[in-house]
Length: 403
Image (cartoon, rainbow, N blue to C red; front, side, top):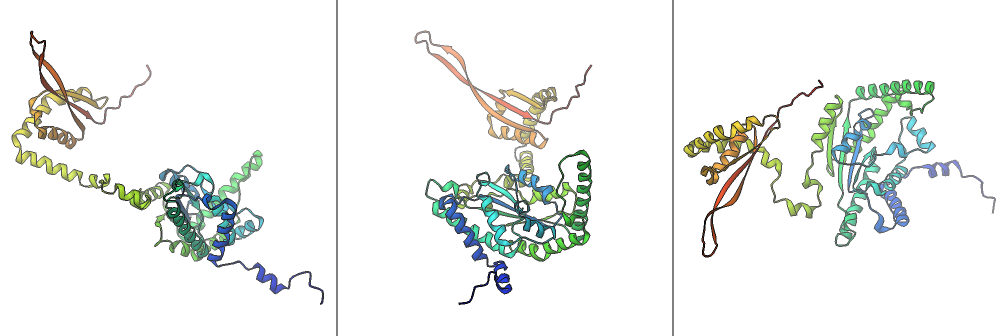
């Protein structure tokens, strides 16, 4: 036999360097590695994932903290670009390209297994390709399988049904390029100052310094990442946020998108247990119309009682309320028999509500001695009802200054 070559032929090298694009192969390899390393019952991923994506310069970094606050998340966000710190990955990123799917998937999955992310986290920059989307979907399937597997065991709380939010911050090409270059100029100025002062430098992205590189980075997003993110629409809670405007307007858009909806986030069994109870939003929606209807019914159907209650409020309640205008809270006690009628109590609460106050009524009972039987020592009593009203409103703000 002839001597084997010390190096692979160029064709073999090219085959060896080809990146695997089969999502099932990538996922299976990564999953098997994690299972062998951590153990099956320790594959505990985040209950809630907020997948934050968007065009370059759309404000992902700027808005991450606000998103975390809106979802009550305290752990640090997982920023995929920060995970990819190998020299080769850095060269690809500096050129405006994207790092291989296999490396990204493994790094992200490993990070999601860290204990601090069990309840939830913001995942910035994943998925960015079709392969990564498919790997994400396979992960969610595995998480659901684990949830079913451990549902009736003491470990069930560690394998809850996952909640996935996809949040896409979008800006057009011009805005993206302008923001990238503006960020580059700002960092360059900060670094020039840092060099003069001997302080730490901030990372400068090549794409933030070169208009053509910034344009190429945006187009990579539109051609690859945008399509991948769009494919998640039918699978998860999808939030498209217009990020063109001011920070305040973008935050309003985010808040509107992330309003809590228990039916979408609770485990189905948990939701079924409480769904028959009315939502506060449902009660509030028609509360004003119902108040108007009740007030009109008092006037047209219970006119005498309504007028008596109004006079009592005017004569007895309002003077006390006026005296407590500064703290914005007044208490009124009454023994008027008018309130023995439950409808009169309801009228008081509604009248104050219509006038912009918040009123609460309580009934206290007290025994009043009437007579004593001298032979037996037995005391005969009558029960007296004392109606106690708590009335709250916006108090007066007093300016207190020094002498």
